[in-house]
Every structure is written in structure tokens, then in C-alpha cells.
View 1 (cartoon, rainbow, N blue to C red):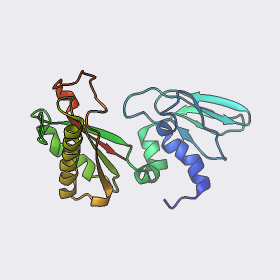
View 2 (cartoon, rainbow, N blue to C red; view 1 turned 30 degrees about the vertical axis):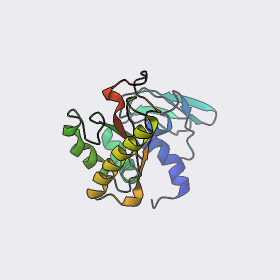
View 3 (tube, rainbow, N blue to C red; view 1 turned 45 degrees about the horizontal axis):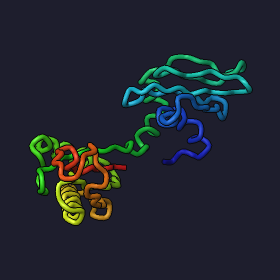
Length: 209
């Protein structure tokens, strides 16, 4: 970004308030200087959030999408913003922010590195979503069910992860940005006893940062 650190400390609260409060239901966002506006954006997953804006010992709480506050002689003044104001004030900052981390899961046929039928329609969409990111950092984690030995499942899990890694590289991702690892049957999505062919455990998780 070309903006100064002082600008970022104020405007990033406004442009990305949903990120600042994602892990906390109530978070303070002090107004750093005259003219700075704080706007609470709607979260992508619909989760509720709130941010407290403080100025000169006074505080207002923003707890609805597009609730906003700006400094005044009497302390922070609350008002309701809108998408047009957000774009006008903070469009460049939002555009420059990296995409939010996300994850995808693809399932596999028992004992093979072949996509299960329910995952085949999703493959291209998943790979396209990952490839559209400017500088993706991708970790591909292979898993198995509990059928077979630890040694066999470790090898199969890595084989599945390497298949997905190869497909991502074919679609333009740099080899150095995609890491493949296998976890075998150590991290079951659905806990089962040994020897159980649980389809939901035969998967590859794709973590995109």
C-alpha cells in the first residue's frame, strides 16, 4: 500500500472492522485523529460482532453492519454508513488487502487417489477459486479412513495430497507456493474404530492463506 502507517492505524479499523473483531465479540477501536471514520462492515459468514470506538474518554459501541462513528467536539458521533461511503473512502485499502484464509475439502474413493463422485463436480470450482488469488499460500493435507496399516495409510494420504498439489500446479500455481503433507488416519473427521471404511475420513483438506 502507498498509505502511511498513521493512516493505516485509523483507516484499517474502518475498512476492515469485521476482521479486527472476528475473534472477539467486543473490541476497542480508538479514533486516532480528527477526521477518521470507523465503520463496522458486515461479516462474510453472517457472524455478529461489535466494536467500541473511544475518543476523549467517551465511547460508542457499533454493533450493526455499517454502524459508524466519527470524531466530534462532544466525542465519537454515531451514524449509519452505507456501501457507497465505504467504497468511496476505503475502496483502495479494501482492494489491497489479501483475501481471507479459507479451506476446501475433497473426498476420495476407498483405497485410491481418485476423487469420489460427490467431489468430482467441485474440483474445477475449488481449483479456480484458489488460482484466482494473487499470491496464494496453499497447504494440501491428505487423510485416510482406518482401513489398513499405518504405513499404507500414510503413503496413501500423501499420494492423495500430491495429486491435488499437482493439479493446482497444472492450473498455474507456483510449485513453491503449494505444500503437500499426509496425515494418514491420525486426524479423523469422523472418529471410528480401526478397519472402518468411513468415506468422510478419506479426504484432502486444502488450506489457502
